[in-house]
Image 1 (cartoon, rainbow, N blue to C red):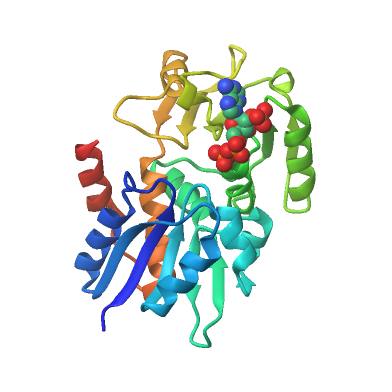
Image 2 (image 1 turned 60 degrees about the horizontal axis):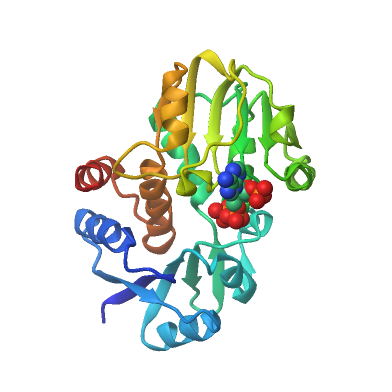
Length: 270
Ligand code: ATR
């Protein structure tokens, strides 16, 4: 029987994951079926159980189920435990559910693909929600020179920094605490969705700097436009999406797909 995988979300019809994983499967010769499933808002655990009963071997998890997925796991990766969220479920041979989060690895791989060197870099992360919590451990593992988390609600950023400060040089505060220059500024807020921009000072970027938005779309986000006008190189989060998917695929199938052609195809279709 073909091994089944899926992405759970609500809504999920717009998800690019089925197309990405179909491309990975074709490329690696893995016989898998990957679909999108809209889980009921009040019963994520039931949706996962039913999927497993029907031959499901693993799943990606997206908004709004990442924390619920975290809670149902029997075992967790270290980085998922830190993130408090799971985007990858794996059914073990013993019927147990293992949870991992591949978002942060995806971000770091995409940054490296763009030639960003993180070691020693001055890094600013905007936002202190789930999306940011999910990427901090892999970012800190690259040993940036400094990492400042800035958020509209300053206390949330302070708390987040305190939760991770055993892993490296990290501080948290409000936007008023932000003073450049930074080599890398990552937007992990959902402000772009509202066409909003966090209040940021001029002089934010170092001479050679990258501005990364974890979001993507056909047009550059408000943040990326603002950053490009100030001389930073703008990069959107489409590559992160493909890289996190590739890491999930590797966890399930033990094979590493070539992400470049898949990303190029997605970019064309945006
Ligand atoms: P996610 O899972 O995407 O991280 P979240 O946990 O709701 O979603 O977090 C959203 C993040 O975007 C938060 O950091 C939020 O700031 P607050 O903690 O102060 O709410 C930030 N955010 C959302 N809209 C924003 C806006 N218009 N300006 C600045 N920050 C915004």
